Image (cartoon, rainbow, N blue to C red):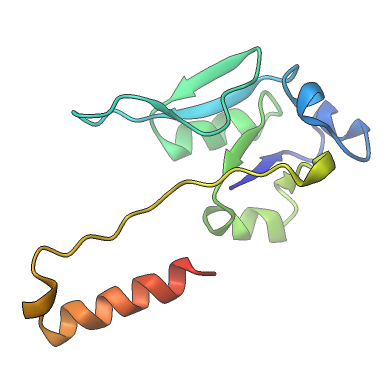
Length: 127
């Protein structure tokens, strides 16, 4: 996950932003509304934080320059390429990752389609 905002956001006044400085800017995070685990996803150190339940809501908050957010780079490739969003340059290489798990109920008896899908997911997520 990478920190992003619109290029006009005040966070880009500096060449690099350290973790302490990042805390002073308003952040948007996703809320997990699952039955078993209700928690926020993302870096949660900002002093001002808005919580949303949908990716498109967070984009609607980012576009006018109200917030920054840590987002999976592959979700926003187009916006980055078009210059609509910009990665916030963090000092010290600070980053955020989300753990993912792949589980198969009966791995030994999985058919060819399940095995192929598993291989594709593993290869894609390694990137």
